[in-house]
Image (cartoon, helix red, strand yellow):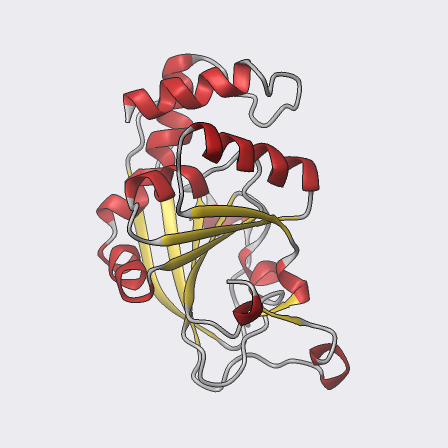
Length: 214
């Protein structure tokens, strides 16, 4: 992991300098707060590991500078990884990072999840990009599709978010992990109910099918 962190940081400080993909540019902080922080929840969570092993496809939403998307793709070269981000510059930049790191199993895309019908079984991850209830409401899943979602959060989640009244999703896990140089990391997992999520009829016809490009 040290070599991955060093190579990654060299790209960020070199040809991608000025894009502000991360504010963490100290080598030790970058290693702990970006690389280790991206991998420890997956490495230590039996729920996360099992779901990804079953589906072999992960979609990371709002990946920003590539976290946890790129470290996870590096960790598991036999699985497929796709990133959605609303900013094309970030998608292009992370694509370049993957090229430089010679990662063949990851594809960063300029795409918003609320514009996609998630009709393919996969694991979805969110790291520090919004509130759980709001983000789950943006994932549209048809009947019979097996989707699990994991949220990378800090330990103060209970004081910051109201998780009552979540519809169409069942909580399957809630775990805490120690990450050097940070507060504890909290990983919370949800599985879509068998009937899928509610999709307004007027919206469904405008959604892009995930199966067409994943």
